[in-house]
Length: 112
Image (cartoon, rainbow, N blue to C red; front, top):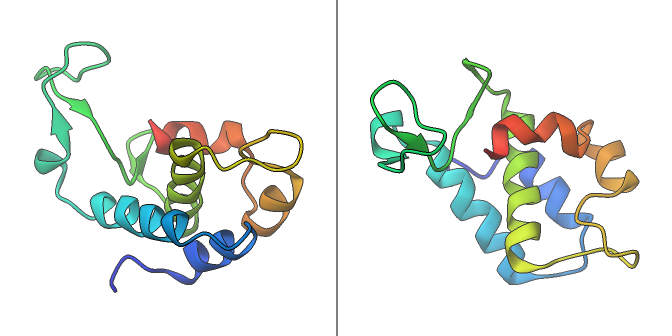
């Protein structure tokens, strides 16, 4: 699986066993491999100069995101989408930050 980096596997392992989470994170990583012209929508809100809006991106502030950031963002987005939370109701906690090296704020531009 070309999108299944070790980073995604590590981040998914830090969550309770959840096959849906694993599949969703892998799916989002696969989408991040699409060429930009295939991963755009025509929504005007937040669009670029051609009226396209990113749906999934492997880019961060105009530069290709590191594989670890893209994998962490995919796990974050999968957890948010599926409603996976820790015992305090948080999508991303200190354990996730420690093992991935990313806090929620640093993943924001990649998740968008």
